[in-house]
Amino acid sequence: MPINGKTSSANSRWMNSDGPDAGIVISSRIRIARNLAGVPFPHLLEPEKSMEVINEIKKALENKEAADLIGNMELTLMNDLSLLERQILVDKHLISLELLNNFQSRAAAIRDDEAVTVMINEEDHLRIQCLFSGLRLKEAWAVVNNIDDGLERTLDYAFSEKLGYLTSCPTNTGTGLRASVMLHLTGLKITNQLGGVFNAISKLGLTVRGLYGEGTEALGDLFQISNQITLGQSEDEIINNLISITKQLLAQEQESRQVLYRERREVIEDRVCRAYGILKCARILAMEETMRMLSDLRLGIELKIISGIQEKLINELIVKIRPAFLIKTAGQDMSKRKLDIARAGLIRKEFENGHIGH
Amino acid sequence: MFCEKCNQRPATVHIAEIINGQKQETHLCEICAKEIKIHGFGFFPQMNLNKFMAGLLNGDFNGSSYNQTGATGKVCEKCGVSEEQFANKGLLGCGECYPYFEEKMLPLLRRIHGNMRHVGKIPERKGGRARLVKEIEIAKRQLKEAVDHEEFELAAQLRDNIRQLEKSFEEGGEG
Ligand SMILES: [Zn+2]
Ligand SMILES: [Zn+2]
Image (cartoon, rainbow over all chains, first blue to last red; front, side):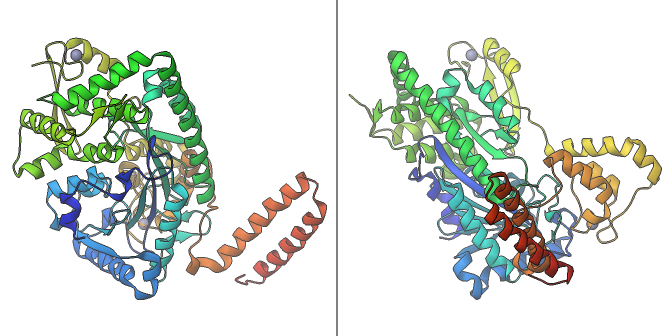
């Protein structure tokens, strides 16, 4: 699919909600940082030299002998995309914020199924990421590891025996690996347990962030948990650590939902149905309220209070209701009030078929 | 206009901020606005990692060790980045910066990661001796485990294995 297909459809494979425990573990992501040996890091490169880096990596991606490891990737220069298109790729988690804001002489190669992105001249020469639905960190690492091996057939990486992969920011030195999961922790939020949980997590060398990463708020009770340490632990250790903590969180979240449903059934049903009512009928919906209502609705689907709406739709809506996608669909810039009206209209239409169960 | 958070009271507080490069306005009632002030928009500090690190490093630079090495500071011969530039931006200039600024880098890495030694993946083309070092490390770890579990037969095997690996390392072999 060409890049304009990727910005005109809100769906990516990872949104299909078909991975293990995808009702709560919305997605798993593995990302590694790599740099070319002997070449200054991207923030020091002149445009001409940056283009040389892009071309060198492009050749490595197209290397026939590594095709079985890398797969079919389509490379796009960020200069060739509009701000709106780049924003949609950010909203879909296919490229990073860094590429949204600094787009000169930068590129991204996105695999056809949108599960894999290779970013070029981001903070490092190479950022390779794989994104899957559900708790599938090991599978995502296997994909990234293969692509890394494939690229290495022709690329010479900046690497030291002692410090591992050398990255432009020392917070990535070593494995260059950032493993993360996106979790919907609405039960823990409602039962007021998030503070304690996050406190414990931060003591285990993990960080918690909002839906769109560093410095973003936790919209709709969606949280990204990722490893902080990249040096002194192997890739497997980092990933296994995150998996076991995610499983703990998953169990606690399920437990708190069961308690809520058992002991506050009417309250939870009321909360879910109210959210559904607002989403189905409201004429003006601001971002924050919509995300909160979608969070309640997702909980309602998981608890089987609501039927006829798939979680895949909720995942897609998170992209569709953001300003970039609404503006792209409307074909014109809109004021905040117009956006809120367009958002409400879109959601009304999407929910025509849902209904309240039992 | 009603408050966007509770949708119950009139919005009297208007907040404008840039999120993902787009200006977003939030309209809240006083009660909800206060809540946000107390809890923050997210629940965690929104810090910029680069700046945070630069702060750590700047602390080091102003310390006594910096004054001893002189005020001009080192410059990486390969990319031209100076210690000061690194301290300000939080980003290194190239792979060569690591050995150049080693004196400052190692304590910084230990502060960030609690460790200064890579034990993860090794690129195949770098293989050779690095792989050998790693193999010795792994075998030593296994040896310790075997001894801890009183599996002496396995321990003896591992000891032989380590001796072999170390021998080929000393001879400059590539495993
Ligand atoms: Zn309010
Ligand atoms: Zn340098």
